[in-house]
Length: 289
Image 1 (cartoon, rainbow, N blue to C red):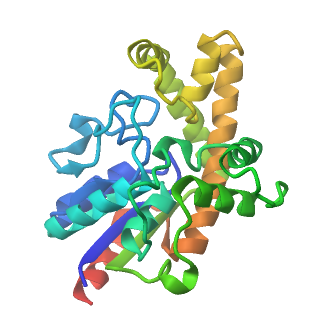
Image 2 (tube, rainbow, N blue to C red; image 1 turned 180 degrees about the vertical axis):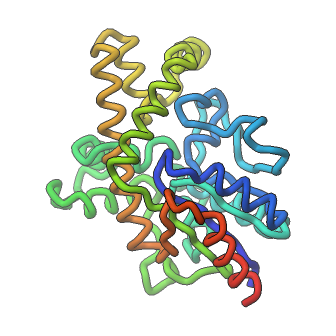
């Protein structure tokens, strides 16, 4: 089976730096696994890697789609599988767990199951439940059960995926999944610092530009949604800032739970001084097997 490496974890956990170091060491090519970074113009707020940060490593599935268009889980699945077939050692890097899993396991999707990438997994539970009711007015899911709400929403948005017995947990490839774990207090500090740097680096202007150039762009993404609310005078900038931090931390918690339950990763500590060495040891064993 074709070997595929996955580097995942919450935002600001160090995925980018580790992936670049590993890609250089193992001559891998990186496939973006972040559902927002496929969109053009969504740069600062999505912490999209810059050309300088790439350090010459080939990256795929960045800046593919115009902001007013949608990029479905089916499209992602199709594109990733084609890339895996064509790349000697593919490395998927990102935090969009459902998208990554759909590409690597026997999910059966069709091209009419479109579901916007930016719309998924990025809403809080109350918002998600309201969106679910719009998509499936007859749903009977308990709105006080976050896991069931998220599962039902994902099913309604993308089309019902195959049942467990029909392949959702059957891998198509030989997969090594490395998850970067980071203490919650440290993550909050990093998220806060990163957001403040984004604001200093003209994140607000980025959102303004998207709104002006693409009136129908979907801004319902953590960070972009709150800055848009600020620009529309619905909230203050400080309220937007605090809300982004809170939503990002909540999302990181959901990401961690989902990945651990759905993808059985090897957990690595993001703050470990020997992180690169330990990740390399796992990859060495994986490539030898």
